[in-house]
Image 1 (cartoon, rainbow, N blue to C red):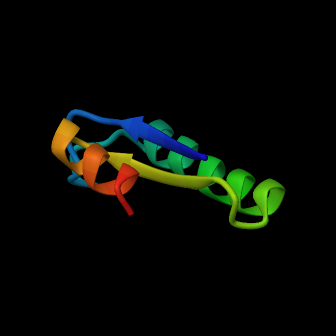
Image 2: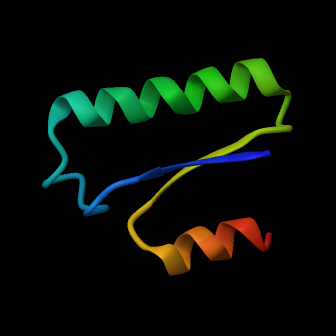
Length: 55
C-alpha cells in the first residue's frame, strides 16, 4: 500500500505550519501502524507519484 499527500509545492518555505504539522503527523502515524507495509510520502507532481508507485 502507499499513500501520497499531494501538495502544490515541496518547498518547506511555502507550506504553512499547519500543513507541515499534518505531514509530520501522518508520516509518524503510518510508520507506527503499518510495520512498513504502507508507504507515505508527499509529492508535488504526477510524475513523482508514478515514481513512488513503481518502486
